[in-house]
Length: 360
Ligand code: GYE
Image 1 (tube, helix red, strand yellow):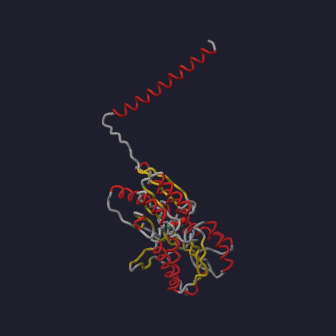
Image 2 (cartoon, helix red, strand yellow; image 1 turned 120 degrees about the horizontal axis):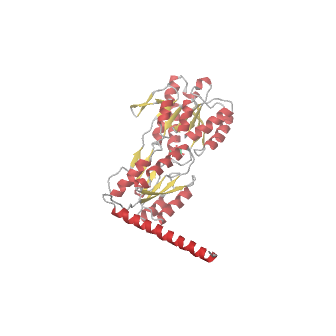
Image 3 (tube, protein in one colour; image 1 turned 180 degrees about the horizontal axis):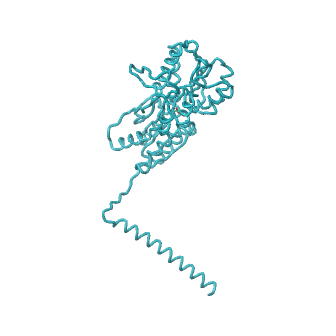
């Protein structure tokens, strides 16, 4: 066979293969329509743009995962996700892009409370409903967002401080001997505002000393750096109030590197750590008795957000504010319950089994 003939044969085979595959595809598409007893829908997905703060902590990673799982195609939602790397400017840009893309809904987890009036106004003008998650927005007009889902940060702080008060009473420690440093979260974030101000009012009320309050952006390495410096400046510190678990992990490293011990008994010279989030990594340190109390901040908000979107979309009633359920876990049994708003609030003594059963 000549080279030319060979080439013609090859091309003919290729063309026939293509015609055959297209034919099969066409046939199967037709067959699909005709299958008896099967109803085919043209799925109309809702498009949702989600601007997340970043990935600064284990809590945040769990929150992102929960939202991605619930706002999924399986649930009729097409999600456009944007990670703002803890920068408000990036969140504003992301929201403007969502508006250009004509999404059906915007979900915003704001890095700080202020600075949202203009961009949320733009979303409103474009007719796009906004749902706020986790931290709050401080805007002049609350109708700029449909609803909010998150935690009661002031209540979390109240639980932590009532626990510390009960702990000190049981151990016969005088309030003036309680020397606290506060490793704060990102300044201006609702979680930071609620947790810091709760500690400040309790310290004022009970007579504890706050030696220093320093922000560490909810990040482990930053907290280690901050705590290393604070240990040098305030050797009398005996309580560290960490505004999230990743900061507690960094704080433990700093304490141990300085030759001191993180533990549950300050009467023995240990440094007592209180933390927030109750993530798997944080609770592991509670089991090791390096964090004395971990107040839960529940990141599993995806399903509530999905239900809210569906309610808004179908014109059903929905709450403007939804608070998620939260517990508190202790490393020992010194305090098993506190009085919170006139009722008993249980402090859960953490066990390996409880930790195993947790979802994040
Ligand atoms: O405690 C921290 C995260 O806003 C509740 O932000 C959230 C906080 C959470 O980075 O781990």
